[in-house]
Image (cartoon, rainbow, N blue to C red; front, side, top):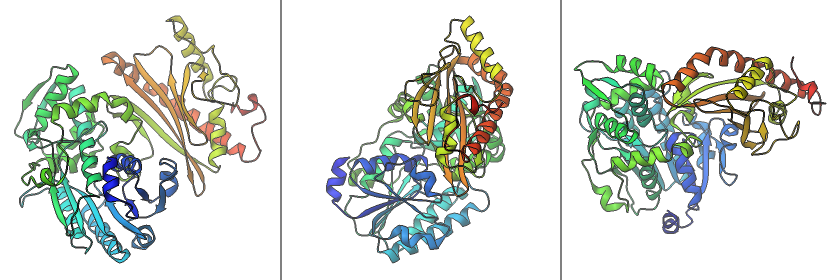
Length: 501
């Protein structure tokens, strides 16, 4: 990929929109690794700035607010447009259209030399609303007067991608599947790695007019065939019973019960998969030095990289995919179950992080400590580490430290603390705290993550889920109270005084 940067030379600033999203987050790392001078736009720059390398410039920019775009596009040579409103409420087609028009106008005025847009594959007049909107956005950008490369892709295979996580959840959870007609529609999947390579190369290929490239892997398969290949690689036997009915609306409700998709996203996704998404124009293979992986290798790499990818970007990282949701209760991401909640406090990030870095040991867990000690006692009975280890220092933490029956996997004060469980469990578990600066202070997000093993692992999570909700809610509430108290003193005076009762 460094060859791309060498061929492109120093062409000024590369602007990346959608950097908080699934594809954008991965592209950002490759752009930076390849030597591009990267600028990212974000509705909330503070949120993104904490998650990107210090060399990346993060500025305020919202395609639905035209006044924010001239400054964001100033001095930009190449602009990546990786924005869509699929997860938003309201008229997503109107929002997509308005955003594209604002961006096209600002890019032309700023003198940008190239726009690169990721759209969706699809042909004919009977396109879904989602695909029709993606094509309309591409047309608006191509007609902007700025030479535009539009890449149209089908299913993206990669741990964390929207389509792949739907497939994974269905196959993992359902030994017998009632499969509606959309499961049998032909597609041409592409791996996330190959998609990012196309996006990176699109900044370097020589052209002076707008063009559309259709990209995909070498295999033409249906969603059902992708499911069978995933099941084969996971060693699962699955039975599929086809039925001629099940509308996209009903399918989205069905998916909402067994997959990580929010219903409104699932409905728009299913509305689009009724269209064949295959490559008819093969010019991309002539212009780009990329030979995409087949479906078997793409799935294999997604599974091998699962642990690494879980710590990286996912489709749900995009702000639009979450809408206004602030709490996730028992939502499934990949094979993991996640419970996440957030609270706002009138404290700086450093003040908000102070009670978090003191968790465990003499300070305890802020809420229902007797239940934590009971869990530790039960762990000792089955040969686990229990709660007796305490912690090395009452206020300092570093990676690798023991904290009762947890281990510090990662700590980045005052932004992040990730603890991995070392008690005996039918799976693996993590407890994560993130601090996000806001105008009024900070937001503290607490996330419990469980990677169950087998049916017993899932039963363990759901049987204890009501207790977990009570404990984690109480703990977060009292951490917020302790963080607010820090604002009135330089620090918590002693470990004992940080207890919230």
